[in-house]
Length: 323
Ligand code: AVI
Image (cartoon, rainbow, N blue to C red; front, side, top):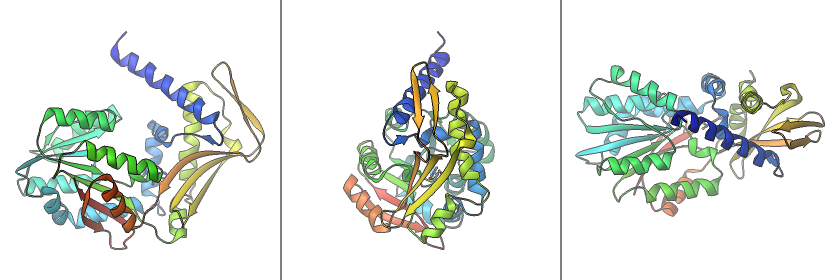
């Protein structure tokens, strides 16, 4: 069987297993990593452009207005290095840093890592034209598998970027474990640059995940649509509503889908999933942190926090940690 086809079948059976495991657990849960099919990618772009979703603009401001400062910290006296971006997406924000590093003639190779082969192909096609002279090596796959591959490819020092508050989509304990695992993949002196969304006025945070135009609602419902399309299920989308919460004490912002009626949904041949009226599906966490918590996370994972870059409102921080 062609490898591509085998990979697709394996992916769809993992998707089915994850959906079944989540919807037969109590409380019901779906994994937000599955939000990003083609329609989900477009909806996420719309979220990033909607007025309430401040995160993208804050981090864009850091990357566009503090580029020289970022470049100086990232360069760290390295003669040459690998700049690795986890979950690179369209690399709009990092392009500012890449351009500046090229202008100051830094010797580096950019290695974007993404789970989507489409994202990597796009970057390989578009970035060299935008940034002449850029050495680029895209890596398509799981973050840690690809980080290992990057270490095999070269023993140059590594600078790893994890931007956009992607770390917020892990519960706090998982984020700690992720950072410790990241540290294991790095050598002393290597750097990590991580974007954290900071605690702020709870209403500002809640509005970002409950926008007036209902894009975030559609983003959540789109996962049910994806399950319908890919796993031949019959979720009736109009029988679910989106509900977002933010707890200022824990910093946990959560999205749920609420079943508006008692209903059942057949998944695969044997599983009949029952929903009570008002029963919820836990869809996503977007964790918010204090600055102190990010420093604690660094130290706990074996990093030394070296620098904080804030936007002008102090709503978002890109931290730089040294391994
Ligand atoms: C990708 N991630 C950082 C976004 C966030 O803010 O948690 C995903 C998102 N979910 C709803 N709106 C945006």
